[in-house]
Image (tube, rainbow, N blue to C red):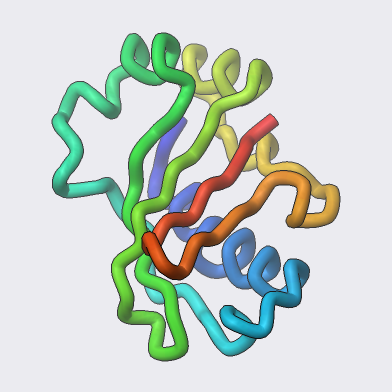
Length: 118
């Protein structure tokens, strides 16, 4: 289930912690000031069918030294996240607890963040 609590967890915990863990000098002072649905993505991108078929979900995150630069945030769904999402269960527990370099990437040039869920 994609709910407000999950988006808040991404904003306040997952993205900031991952940015610290990857220790990239380019993103050293970045912070996140919001995660929300991608307003440019078609509504169909948020259906269970789309996510099951494509295995990702497009979102937006506001990240940067001032927290105000819009980044495309792509959540890639692994098997556990797909299963939980299909059953309307929280996917918060599908955020890996291993080192962020294994599941988190940020491309400052293209303003893209990708997170691989379990």
